[in-house]
Each structure stands twice: as structure tokens, then as C-alpha cells.
Amino acid sequence: MPLFVVPTPIGNLKDITFRALDTIKTADVLLCEDTRRTMKLLNYYDIKVKMLSYHEHNERNRTKEVLDMLSKGLKVALTSDAGTPCISDPGYILVSEAIKAGFEVDALPGPSAILPALIMSGLPMDRFFFLGFLPDKRGPRRKFLASLKKLAFTSIFYVAPHKLKRDLSDILGVWGDRQAALIREISKLHQECRRNLLSELLKEAEGIKGELTLVVDGSQDVSQKEEDDSWQKVATHLRNCGMPLKDVAKTLSESYGIKKNLVRKFVLDQERLERLEEEKDES
Image 1: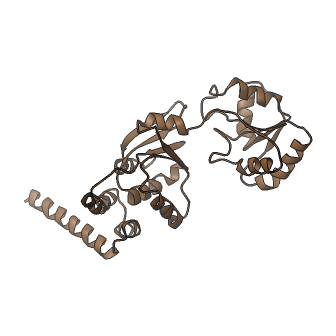
Image 2: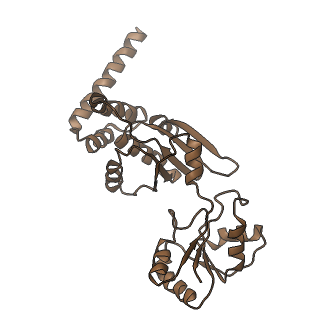
Image 3: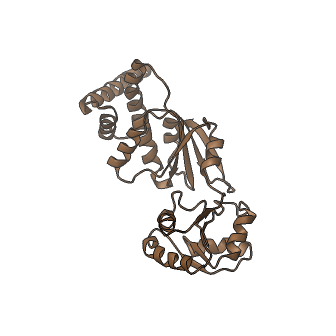
């Protein structure tokens, strides 16, 4: 008996296949990230099945137990709270260990935020990269982004609402300003897609809540002069978005290899010129 990996709706409970429902109904054990969340789906379709919690805090310990179930011929189905298990959700360890133990894995097609977000973004769809959630720590996060800066393909990120400003700031700081789309609450009542430059999305980021997917355009071919000038534009954008001067200097220094003093001088000179212009207008 294979291990079944079953995607579940990401918002609208009707977004589930007949095959997924049949697999859940006939499972001996249904692995759930949060049994309370999965119960809502089961109640909606009037399904009764034995549930067992399987989440990031217990997956290593639970995996051996699940392999024992498979070895006894039990039908085990793995789900997550929403979307496809293993994709920025628990499941990879179990799938990997099941394959090593000689079990087949049957991954059912189904809901995921990745493709709807890509399509709604209107950005190039022929080739794309899914990059999941960015690392929590600033150093690894910026190093990760720097390693992908020259990719010519569309990139897709999952973003936690409370980290939206942080992630937009770092992507803008490392990659420069690009066309992007922020898609919120896919398939839910308040679904929304904001298409704009990264710098503009950053200005609008305060207070945005819900399940977020960010789609960013790939790197474009630019002249050397444009490449050299880009850090000044990014510095100006970051200051306009309210980033403290010391953070702007640090961001640009790490992203472009520019001395912090040079960045600070540029920003202060620009702001001094702006004040002079304002004083002229008032006089």
C-alpha cells in the first residue's frame, strides 16, 4: 500500500477533487497538520475517518510510527492545513523515509497557491522558480537573495503578513526595483491582487493581512551604466519608504559592495537638496 499525499483546499472548500475525497474516505489513518482545521473539511463533506496529528514539531518522531502502519498494510493519507503537503508544509521527511523504506508514494494533484498567483500576476509564466518562505535570519536571507539576483525567470515567494515589509525591503534592496504582484487570500472571499513595482508595494505594505503570495519579475538585461546607477535609485526608494538611514547604508553595502559612508553621503546630499527646493518653493 503506498503513502497517499492529498492536497486540500487553500480557502474555498469546494476546491478539492473527487479522487482526493475518495482517498480520504477510504483511509485507515488521515495524517493532519492540525486536526481541528481538517475537521472543518471532514464535517463539510460528512466524512468520518481516524485522524492523527502530523506537524513540524512531531514529524520526526511520528514518521517511524507511520512507517510501521504502512508495513502492516494500512492505508495512510497525508494532508496539511491547506494546499499540498511538503510544499512549505510538513511531509518531506515522511515522503523521503517512506521511499527509503521501499514504499511507493502516490501524490495526488490538487490545490496550491503557486500557480493561481503566477497566473494572476500577469508576469512571464513560461519558466518560474518557487522559493517558498525566505530565511528568518537577515544574513542568510540576503545571501540567499543575492545568489538568485541574476535569474531571468519569474520568482514566487510565500510571505507571512508580519514579515511582508521586511521581505519586500530585502528583495528590493538586493534585486533592485522590479515589477511584482502581491496576491492575498487566494480563492477566499477577499481575494485581491496588487500589481506594481516592489517599491510601491512596500509603501502599501502596512496593515496587509491574510495568506500572501508574492510574485516578482525576473532579472532584465541592463547596460553597465544602468547597473551602476541602480543602487542610488534603491537607496532613494528605501528612504522614501521610511527605512532608517543606517539600515539603508547597511542594505546597500551588503547588496552592492558599496562603502556605507558613500551611501550615507548620497542620501544626505539628496535630502539636503530636497529641503533647499522646498525652501525655495515656500519663499
